[in-house]
Image (cartoon, rainbow, N blue to C red; front, side, top):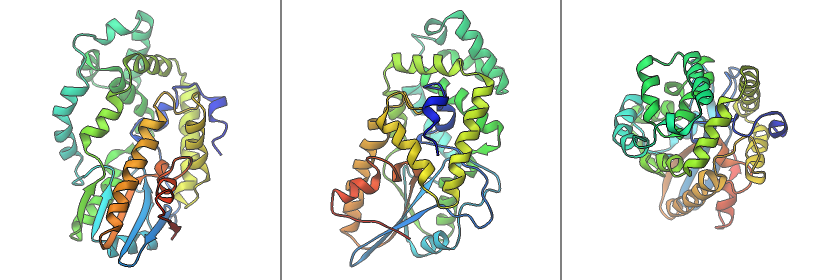
Length: 315
C-alpha cells in the first residue's frame, strides 16, 4: 500500500510520519469500534509470550484493543516495552531533561551557523505554523538538528489530533499498573535518545534542510498516506506497515531516510530477540508491546527470533 511513498515524497519529508522512534515509526488513524491491533503468541513448555505492535501517538478516543489483547493483558504478569514507563508523560519528560542537556544541546554550533538565511526563514515559518511558543522557538537555536527535525516534523500530526498521552504504550502501562503487573523495557530512555543523537551531524543537517523544503501540500499528502497505511494496522492488517518498512530497509532513498535502518530497526531487533530468548528460558506469561514496524519487513523481530529457532504464530 505504501510502495509509492518513495516515488511521491521527498526523501526526508516522511520524517513527518515517523519522527517519533520508532521512533518508528508512526501515526495511527482512529479505527472502527471493533478494530484490534495484530497480536502474536510465542510458547514453550512453561512460558507464554504475547507480542503486539504499538504506535506512540493516537487521537483521543481511538479504539485499538479488543478481546484478544485484553485477555492477553489480563493473563500476563509482566509487560515489556521498548523502554520502561510509568504511564505518565510528565515522568518521562523529567527523566529526559538531563539526558537532553547531554545529547541535544549545541551551544558551540547553533542553528544559525548550520543553516542559510533562507533556511532559517523556512524554519521560523514552520515553527509559527506549529504554534510553537516564542520561547521554545528561541531555544531551538541551540539544539542539535535532530531535535528540531522532530519538533517540526511531528507538528502536523499534533495538529491532526495525535497525542503522545494517547499512545498505545502509555495506555498499556496504565492498564498494567492498575492490575498490578510489573513493567520492563528492552532499552533505556538514554539508549533511545542515543539512536538519534548518534546520527552524524551532516546527515542531521541535511535531513532538516530537506524537511524545511517540503510544501504544505506534500505535508498533507504524507499525513494522509501515513494514516491510511496505519488504518489497516488498526484492523489487524500488516501489509501497509510491512511495505513501509521494507522500502526503508531496501532503498536508501525510501521515505524513511535518513534514519539508518540498521541502527534504528535491525540492530535493536537483534538485541530484543536475545532478551526474548532469555525470557523463554524462564517461565510465566509476558506481554511484549513494541513499535509495530519492528514486527514486519526484513530483519523483523520475528525473523530474528526464527534465526534462534523461536517461532511466533498469529493469535
